[in-house]
Length: 196
Image 1 (cartoon, rainbow, N blue to C red):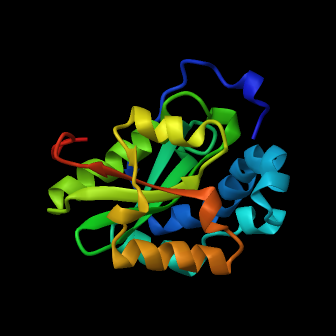
Image 2 (tube, one colour):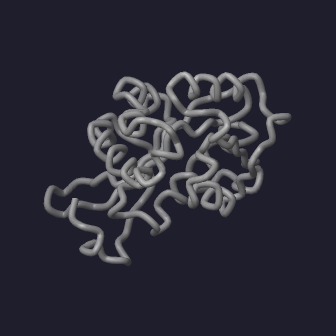
């Protein structure tokens, strides 16, 4: 992708459910987005490769087939097709969606793409009769918690964690993501309604 200085500030994008052909482009976006965390690796105490390979093509294809994978796209006139610039993948919990991964290519960052992907997930959760959307994120990466708070998420104390959330936090810990450096956040989808 071109350097971010070459992307017009008024570029137009749309959010849609992913197609199976989109999955091939997501690993590159995930790797590029992971670069934003490099200044925090010492504090996070995790190796670089953990940030670059959190999702697998098989997992993403299953999510795509189950309509739990959204992509942000721009029209690519050169090939008369959509160009994927970001994605969000979620999984079902008992009464919630859990955001597994949210990535926007840095060339298109800070322009509302990530927020639009989260909103699409919340609208979908509402339409499916789910109560909330949950996620885990890094506590001390400066933009993480404020980004989600602007969208209506709150940090959940451990007393609110369900057995499913506790299992997710422990699963992440086995992969090197220390629980004391993670925050669980949740948002009721009642205010989002069904429309995107």
